[in-house]
Length: 234
Image 1 (cartoon, rainbow, N blue to C red):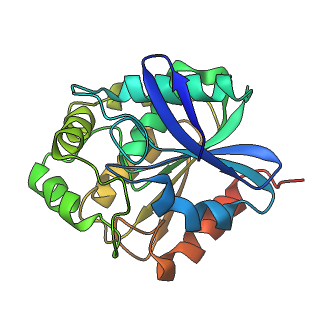
Image 2 (image 1 turned 180 degrees about the horizontal axis):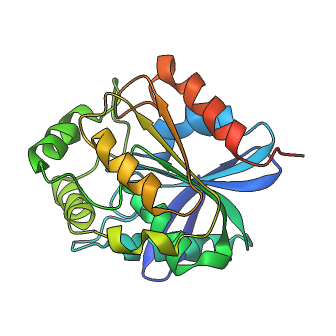
């Protein structure tokens, strides 16, 4: 996976497939390696670009604090360096907050927007999110780049302090909100709130919880929902 210096941070990223760019932004502590099955499933017809957020994977892990706006700027800077001027953007959980921030702050960069298992603010029942931090890890070894606790805390605090609920109406890109009916980390009521506030947005509810995009037995339905929404690849 290449490493690029983007502003003050070194970011790791990888690319799969060819066609219109589709940027995949992971959630709290989620790495490019853990998203690789999803990247490959979406790569037929699209050039899927995924990067480790600051504080995760092979990207640099500076001391906090971090902000969602900072991570959105990281993504925009990376795309500029690799020559991507416009892309579809898919954000998962915390990555959905990064994705919606990109759509608001860099509107010319985002073509279609997919917000998965996310919301414009954290659930008021923060214990659910903290429990989700423990449950959100995929089964199996964490690989060679485990996330330090200070970096996980910095990402969590960035996500927890984020609230763009009042600004969701600024999103003008075609938007899909896709969410698990049984999500306990980001309750489905927040997905309905997000959908209602974004003009013309589409809401797709799937069976499953917070990891509908990542668990093998849920991923096929998730990928189909995304493909049905995005313009078809060449």
